[in-house]
Structure formats: structure tokens, C-alpha cells
Amino acid sequence: MTRSELIELLAGKQKHLAHKDVELTVKSLLEYLSAALCKGQRIEIRGFGSFSLRYRSPRVGRNPKTGDVVDLTPKYVPHFRPGKELRDRVDGAWDDIAD
Amino acid sequence: MTLTKAELIEQLYDDLGLNKREAKEFVEQFFEEIKDALVAGQDVKLSGFGNFIVRSKGERPGRNPKTGADIPIAARRVVTFRAGQKLKARVDRNARPE
Image (cartoon, rainbow over all chains, first blue to last red; front, side, top):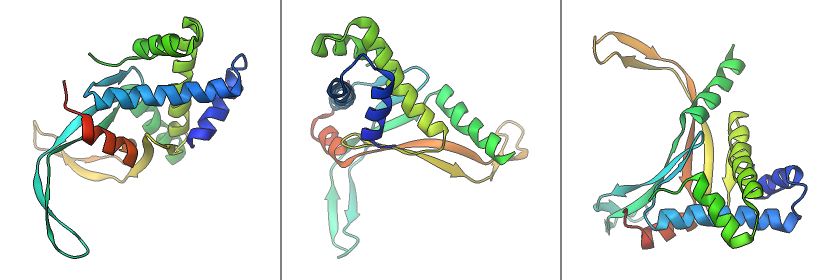
């Protein structure tokens, strides 16, 4: 499912909203999530999951093409942990298919 | 402070003028649609943000840490998230956790 397919699905269910408003709302939600992570803020959505930042220590890496040594600076990367409901539902659906 | 659904609803209300009930319904449906796709085994690719990927993991050997007994860990499906280039770059430029 892509961002535009998500917008179509939501537009089908939010009949009272104009299509461009659904687009704008999805865009805004993704921007709020991104902005929060950029501020170093945690995100917790019950039933869905949580986003946080993980620290990556500085390390010496290599350019895989040339083999040159590159110093990599410490950084933060976004990390998602699925919530219990999402974890159980995704795994449960597997049981249904496997059985 | 942690960003929650309540805060997202508040921001939609402030920025876009959706009323509280509309905003709440939208936020809930937004996450519900993403969940439903993942449960159906579909990856969700949100450009500019990141991709939620459903991965199937095979059975692997495990151990009860208390008793030391060998127990296989059953095959399972899990969701992983890979932040997109744009989000990663933005976080790397700005983020210092609270």
C-alpha cells in the first residue's frame, strides 16, 4: 500500500471531507510524526506501536567500492516497535494461513 | 513529552480546522488502515516518511533462559519499519533526544 492508496482508502471512508482535504490531512499527520522525531520526541500510538530514536556510536566504516576508510559520526536513527495488538494481529494472520 | 493520538488530534484541529470528532475519527482510521494492510501481509510505503515491511521469520532454535531447556521459537510474521532517506537525513541533522 502506498501513500496515495492510503489516501484513496481514507477518502472512501471520510465522505464528508473533500479529496484534497484528505490528502492534506494525511500529509499533515506524517509531518507531525516526522517533526516529533526530529525534535527527539517519542511517539506512542496505542494498539499500533511506538517510535523512538536509537543512538549509533561513531565508528570507522569503509567505502565498499573503494575500500577507503571513512570516519562515521555518531547519529540518531528512527526506530519503530510494533504495539502488542499489531504484533499479535500480524502474527495471528500467519497462523490462519499456515494452518 | 511524548506524541500521542490525543496530540495529533489537537494539531489537526489547530492547523486544519477539523472538528475534534472528525480529527479523532481520521487519526484512528489512519492507523487502522495501515494496520489492516500489514495484517493482510501488505507492505506499507509512505513516501517521505518510511516503509513498514511484513517479514516472515522461519523457526529457529531457542532456549528457556531459566531452565536451559531447548525450545524451538516458532515461525512468525513481524513488522519492521525502515525510515525513508528524507526522514533519516532530517533526523540526523536535528535530533538530540529529550
